[in-house]
Image 1 (tube, one colour):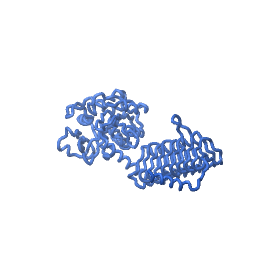
Image 2 (cartoon, rainbow, N blue to C red; image 1 turned 60 degrees about the vertical axis):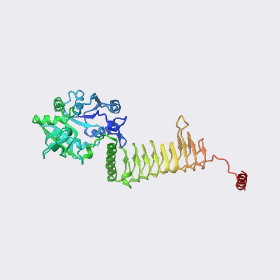
Image 3 (cartoon, rainbow, N blue to C red; image 1 turned 90 degrees about the horizontal axis):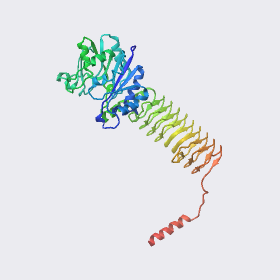
Image 4 (spheres, rainbow, N blue to C red; image 1 turned 180 degrees about the vertical axis):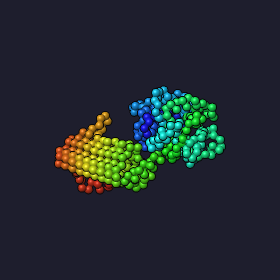
Length: 450
């Protein structure tokens, strides 16, 4: 692709079938809004301009788009897709390159498919438009495309306006289109609304162009790539499609998924080679897993960095800021948040490590917690290399445990512990011979009297 590129993303629809206060294009797939999935994909094409057409709920869309530096324009009235695209004309005044028209609720179209559309447009000076078509299992109410064997379009028609013969066709219009800017605006200016819906249809530019003796071409892609979202069930279906593709990629890249259909990735999850992932593992955004790590079943991991040959779970929860060093281990029912577990360190079960730094080869006993919050502020706990924290201990931050130190089981540590020292915070054990037997006898006698 050598011509300059501008992209118009239509995101003005009300999305009433979603029944949501959140704008339709901001509903997430793999933890990222649909609209941002699409914008991320566009980076591979290096567009000069991106214009997002907003409508109902525009404030929500603008809050997402503005920090990225892209322009937004408003479609105040919902008068059809052709009308929506025209709202970007002023924003692109003076621009004469290619224009790619996309939809914010069709987020999974690939950069390769977009580039293919633009390549077809650019190689033929007679070309006025390139349309992306697909053949769904159920064509339903999609607009139909009549084309010859070379992909040259003879007619495009919306379902509402199609004849029975046209409705019987299987080649459908995805709505995605590539044009040159001068053609785009002059053709849209001629589009009328004499149709069943009384709207200005974007596909009408194709018929206007062919009527002028120009060429319009359709290229095809898989239906899954242009699946749109208009309801919660369609959102779930698109999530499932994305996850299936991501699981396959993880396995192709050298990870083992014990039960692939039960593993859920985020949009940015990074998985190394020779990683083993058990059943029912969920990755939230911001997670990186290094080579050779093992993630056991039923673990939930978000915003965490897991080192080479580290081990997590089962039933572990790693929250944002959790870092596991090489061969570190987090076992069952362990939670970490803003905590570092050094190389070879272990927290094998029933532990909470929050706002903590644990040195290499330290061992954290079962039931240990770092008491990091006093109801107003968070405090940090530092545990030195090779330290041993006995079971059921509470480390009241801010506190530091020196390298090689031992904290006896059941201790509540409120002061720093020196390196290689033993810290015990519990009363001495006492024993009264026969007391338990006497207690039982006394209480049984009382119960009989009552």
